[in-house]
Length: 123
Image (cartoon, rainbow, N blue to C red; front, side, top):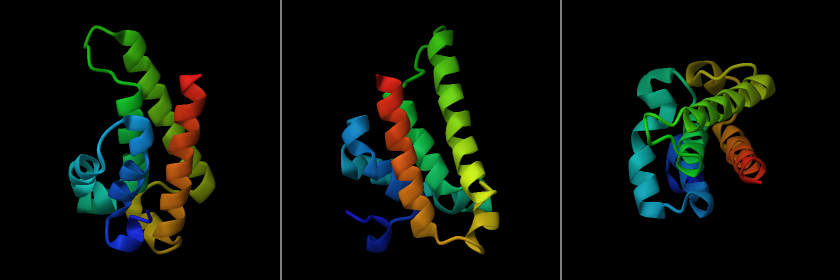
């Protein structure tokens, strides 16, 4: 499904597209990520990047404060995700991206990036 064309924001579109990897149901994914579109409505970190990192956080959870290995792993994955977006587009701030690049392109790229990272890191 093309979530963005159906009216969902960038974060929702990427996060929901990753449901087969996260195991989260679509309705919950769309609700959870709703506030992160448009750089959390502030023009800051691109919602598509945020959606990708959220999905990766579910696949590689850091949910035990004492698990430094899990903490380091998701931190490295999040940094990698941001670096890939920055390398491709030159920016990761929504306000910088919106005037120059079509959001649908970024959404597709970040969904694919998240998928690639999750597949690679799982193996």
